[in-house]
Image (cartoon, rainbow, N blue to C red; front, side):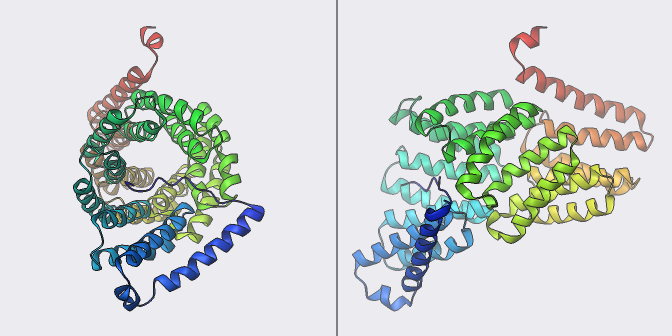
Length: 432
């Protein structure tokens, strides 16, 4: 296939014990398959192909449960065997795309891009540029570009993927739903909230009817919808979805699985909006304990967690702690999504607030400027996160006595907020 769509679970009770036995068996098999090169070299073509497939299957088992570090040697070994034993192009590209998917989830986006492009080139050679398998690979590539902040390229690849799928299945077919979800997530990050919501609503109807309301994939899509609502400050609707999502995911994964961290972070943002900083801190501390014990959480998740924790300290007037935590967040984010990522810009703006509140204006200024440069380069000048930074800059100008410039910046931020409300509001509201 064109890469992996992992919707797996971490069962409980007797099923969990069975799974642990299965993982033990996988590990023992891995010791055999990952043995000396001589056994592979002496094997025939069929045995070599089976070895590659076995290794990829083992890697996928680990990916499904979030064990990315455990998956990596299996998938890298599979590619090494495929490339070194004249395996078919189909086997080589499958190895490449599995690795691209893994690297993407690990936050190794440059490596993921190189591997995905190489796999895509071979895949198109084996099939054609319009084959459905290619559409699934384009989804992976789009996610990589989205993670790198290359939103135009991400949207272009995803539109091509959707075009391929429309030629092979009806638009209201369940197979099209994940592509609609990806487009909704992409549009939400770009600040196109109304279009994102329309794609989510179209997709969730297909997903709930096909998978069921309590399927793991359904809950992941609902969590993405909740994220959209939080960005729109529709906190009550977001909380309603989170209360549906968490019980299902906790039952499937277990109560302390690192796959739950993004949902806890989202809930922490809701508690922050409600003014419940104590509950916000509990959720952030819980997330931090899990992240510190699970390196497979991914660097982007770790960076976003630290950024949120820094915001908590800022809101609590704990500036020394806020500065230290936000510096850590920036280090993690710049080494994962790069120096020009949206999350990096948010952390820069938060750190600027720390210095601003302490009267260290010369330190705040370059951070604001850098955050604004990042956001305007990856989004457009009307993105709501641009308004956040403009408001910080306006406060800075006011504190330094530049009243006219402060007013100009504040008005520009206000115009962005108004434009967002008009674009995303119901027609009846816009005419009132």
